[in-house]
Length: 122
Image (cartoon, rainbow, N blue to C red; front, side, top):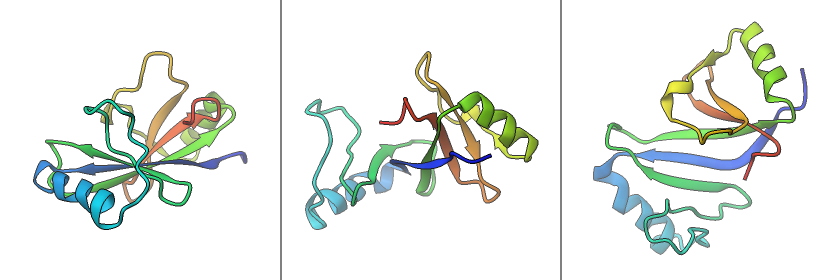
């Protein structure tokens, strides 16, 4: 089954004790263009050559994790294909907005991926 494509978002799940230094690294040390909305409580995000790393503070993390986004034009068909290939669904890792056309999966080495409809990808 084809039509999988990389999304542009990368979630960086960072523990609280590394969060401020991580945001400072991208914002002040590297000086990457910031894409964070004006709302001061919004998740910091940066332009990383067309990819967008989001830096999430996660109190249950003990070390940083990277989560990736992939897209497909037909998530329901993709779900059936991935299930038949033995890919693990992990929808409990983080809630998605009501009505969101997508779901969470994990690679064999436990990298979390958001599979989103190509219409949902931001």
